[in-house]
Length: 311
Image (cartoon, rainbow, N blue to C red):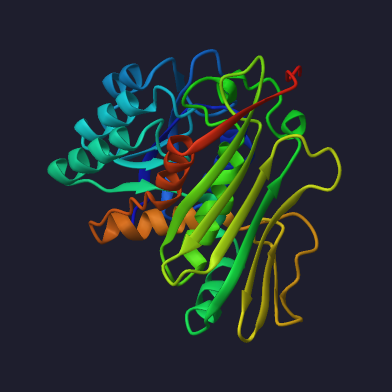
């Protein structure tokens, strides 16, 4: 089977570090063009905008969009209206309404829309989900603490409305929890901590519960200069499940299941394999549970001011 010809929009840090290497090795998708202003690539033609790319190329079958969430909606709409299958980096949009509209548009046009959550491609996700499916959850904790200066250097869009602040990484923890826990999750309380000079939170404390009433606590922070932590801990009647390193490691009831040593790998390979399967089966995957919880956190926020953030 011939590879699907793909374009990438937004050649930033995540695209260069994750998307390009995976697409270079893909046996399903071939990256043939890029849309990104002021960018360069040694072998792939680059156009300033997706509109210019699509005007110059009539062979594009799929588009992956790696721009910041603000302004992503019209780009994705343009790709869908051109008849392209679309994969969205996380978060899939700046608002729920935008992503809902894209889903309606994709269905009407008969193309695939994939709202991707890269943490769900981590090796620990499906083993954790399978084990928890038959257990009673007593409580859970989601801890996502990292150093914004290390992981988001110079990315001012993160602090603008729609950039989500601490929820840009924190939503990865929510995407993991909403995938592996057997019950739906609901937000009860939210504390958001805003630097006095920023329009997005730098930290968040959430109190949630699942459909059976189990308490779930979330601790997100972009000020962690020590050990970086991306963990989910689930206490069950059969012991503790500990998902570590963003899904690179997994321990169940004291028994190591996946060794979390070393750098997390395989997430984006899994995402693109899933995207290929969706296209072949004429299906879409637009799970908005993580983004809904973030929207709820802003709706119920007890907003607190903290010291200014200076990069």
